[in-house]
Image (tube, rainbow, N blue to C red; front, side, top):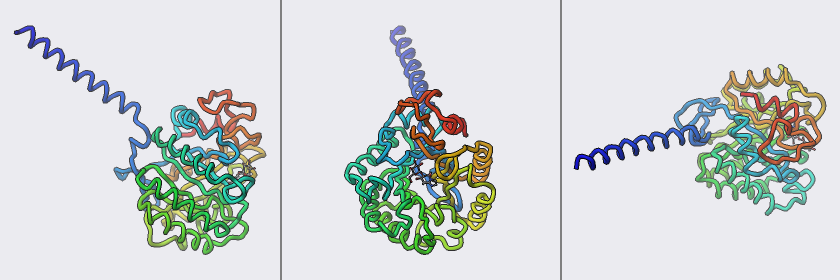
Length: 330
Ligand code: IDC
């Protein structure tokens, strides 16, 4: 009888120890999404489900129509575990060669986005669905397609907590803020019909640099809206930080959904010194940032060397100068 009791006690102690070990394992392995839950916008900042300020460190794919091989779970996991990346941006060109509105296979492109969202979600990462306006200059040009695309996405992802909708990468070619705003009003209305909560990122004029202009007249009537600012460190320096500062001083929530260490062409020299200045400015102001781009294209903004053929589980030998720099950015 006594022996039986001792045995039972030993079993209870063992069970407790096992449970504790289990808890430890889960907390050590917890993902960015498990740690932060649903994000929302409070004032100029991004906050987690406990109201604590969050700064995301992201990586953008190149155009998924051209570099679909990097939309895979091993690539995202490698970025999460080895680089401290917690956000993936899926860039889908709208008008470049084989873009969504210029001859690309729309069903295939949507499938790729769905795959990317699924991998990011399984890994507990945040994910940005980017309608990559560039050659089209004004997002108005493909507003109809944008509305039906985001309707599909918002219906599908309304119950997930890790989605960002980026509705126009970079309005340019003289597109005014009031034009962008009228596009944003229509697309945001569509998204919010289905998805009440996930964050919407709105591009700003002049390749998403005029956040100071947007700050004077932001979109009204919706919560969880942020405005994008983009920079390329070898081209854009302190004058541009002033624009961002002016915007946040006016209370505009800013999100850097794309930046590069190279010149704004995506190529040319890289400027790590200026890039470091940008990162410390962004961190000081609690602004999230996403680096362009996860590809091995022979251009200096690529995070992988052009000789690299690996599409996941990246080794140091796969990384370009830009990639080696970004991997260590905190
Ligand atoms: C560049 C790519 C390049 C591609 C080109 C297409 O790096 O390989 O041929 O687009 O036009 C942006 C854009 C982004 C650009 C990037 C570099 O959002 O699509 O990518 N850039 O030029 N804005 C500022 C710079």
